[in-house]
Amino acid sequence: MLVTIQQIEDQLASTQCEECGYKGCRPYAEAIFSNEADINLCRPGGKRVIANLSKLLGKEPLAPAKPKEAPLIAWVDPARCIGCTLCIQTCPTDAIVGRSKRMHSIITDECSGCRLCIPPCPVDCIEMKDASEAFPKAGDDKWEEERSKKISEWIHIKKERKQQRRSS
Image (tube, rainbow, N blue to C red; front, side):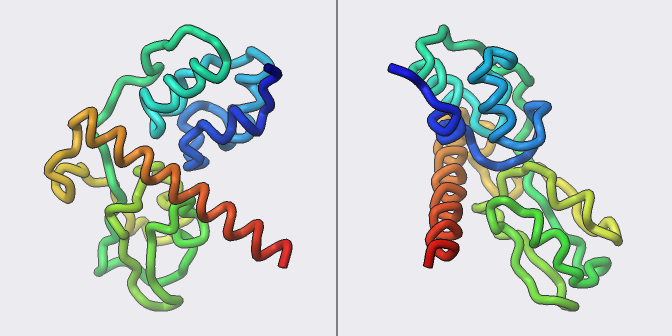
């Protein structure tokens, strides 16, 4: 069976976090397709993504390339947030809510910890905090896998909705 770049990309976490060293999931999928990258670089997807890619590509599963860190989630300092909406525009999981010129908040269940919201913030009001404060099971492998899967599914649903709006 011939594997496509799209099939590879569909297995990734789709957070566009760039932690793999590529400018998003599509370029990483292209690198895997052309054997320029290993299948173990997607930290948000973790072991689940490695196992799925291993099966799809007929390759041996590898250990995750990056050491597992304590899971992090974004937090907005309400005293410093000016409501610019730049963080909302960059969040791949729609985990940030708020209106223009109003303080924003993070939906902790949907935050992937990708850190993409931090660079565009003009007032440095976003910090990454230990997820165990919000999620008592953070760090547990089974919980991490379930959360990664949920976030990936949500991102795929978001992509499908966007494509449907474009074709309507």
